[in-house]
Length: 205
Image 1 (cartoon, helix red, strand yellow):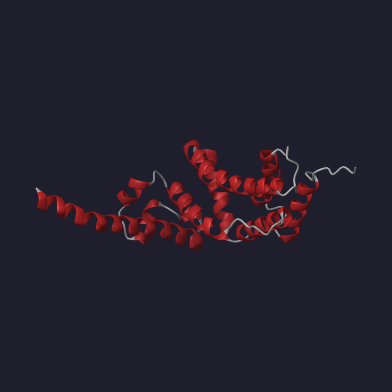
Image 2 (cartoon, rainbow, N blue to C red):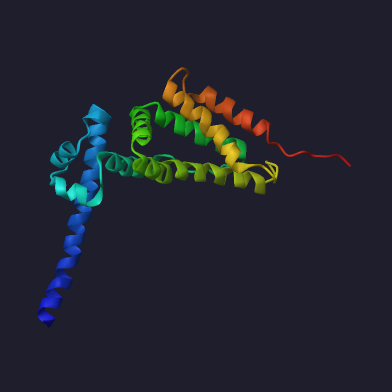
């Protein structure tokens, strides 16, 4: 019995390492297919083949291709859109927007559009998309605004949820409709517009 238990303990780390390797291989395979062929080319079969795993392994962790793509994409974007801290809300907001826009102008924008479309037809995935992707970005932007309040750059009674909507609404609108660019000029316009409407009132005397 004791030898059997020791044998199990010795095996567990190796199994965990193999599981983690497979997990990461699946996420990377999904990203590779997305970037080379687009969202429509992503299937569980294609991911499994590229990652060198069985389809059952994928379905053990994810219920659909959309959830695989969402996790892979979330992990990737978390490393490329850092939360700036330049000492002023205007600078932080501009950097945040300019970085986000630059990323959305490449294949990432197509991925986001595809995930947003998927979320409209699959309510369960739609909820996961909001919790995992949308809410994380709302929380990051909310943190920038909270810093602005602490530094006296925003009114203390500012409605932060509304301000976040004022930023992301135009961003997603341009991303989905593609009627105008997500560029540096728009990052300046959007940040200036929102901040001009939320400046604290300073009274003399």
